[in-house]
Image 1 (spheres, helix red, strand yellow):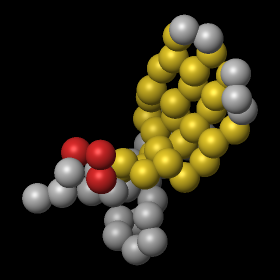
Image 2 (image 1 turned 90 degrees about the horizontal axis):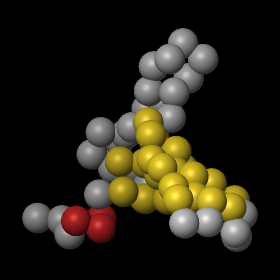
Image 3 (image 1 turned 90 degrees about the vertical axis):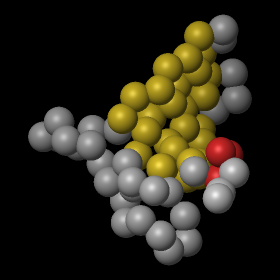
Length: 62
């Protein structure tokens, strides 16, 4: 069984004080947007223009 920290991989990061990241779930392929500013932050599924979750191919080089 994989370790809990192996399920998600960060594929994008921007910023140092205000951070924006994109994480991909290796099992489902769903992309998540994480944003942190100071002491607060949030995580939400990344949506396309139609309001559907962005899904990357599962497996491969993630």
